[in-house]
Length: 251
Ligand code: GLP
Image (tube, rainbow, N blue to C red; front, side, top):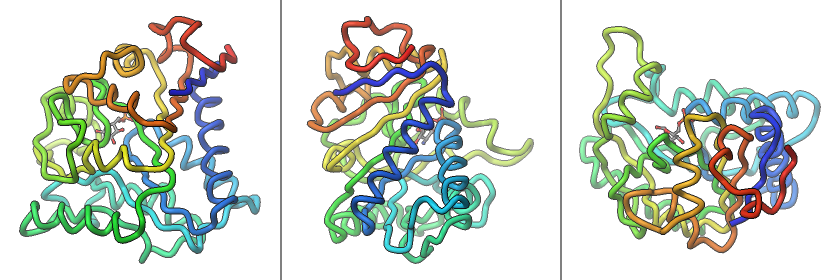
């Protein structure tokens, strides 16, 4: 695992934005895996800015989002479909027909998960997977206890994740307790994985993921098994790592 530490969250986001732009520049029909949450917001904002300045072409890009809440329609402002449209897709020359996100209102969530998994395979897998990291080291919505060879499936969210994400729901709105997430095994089949984590509240999850040992109780620790993973951090998120563990240290 390659580790890059930047002085600030903004610099870490800029580095990840450059990696994404390089990917779509070298392979204009890339299949991207994309996360939601607070962490990638600055990356998506930079991609929008770069696009306005003529950098980045999304016409032939296909995307697969990591996860979606069960029970929310794609029009619900708390859904990840809505998030992706508002934060990235509608601002660039992207064909929404190539945007794949699990259907939150699927009548049969297991069938929907299987459909999604098969669709990723039909596209030949994911070239470049961008991940955030939950405070409990979850990736996608693979909570602690998820098998490292798990596939796309319906999952129950932990109390810690529900609490962390409560802010995205307006007062009085019912917060979904379940989601469909790409599995860890599905994620690990991506050809390249880039993880972005920033802030002190991620430091323990980062250390547990990077230092190992690989355990199902730390979903992020599965990434150590992947041959082409880079984790991009700010100094706060990296505070429990020893300098010797990093290959690039800008701080
Ligand atoms: C959310 C998402 C994950 C995301 C993580 C971190 O629950 N399902 O894909 O990476 O938690 O979120 P944040 O970036 O808001 O800290």
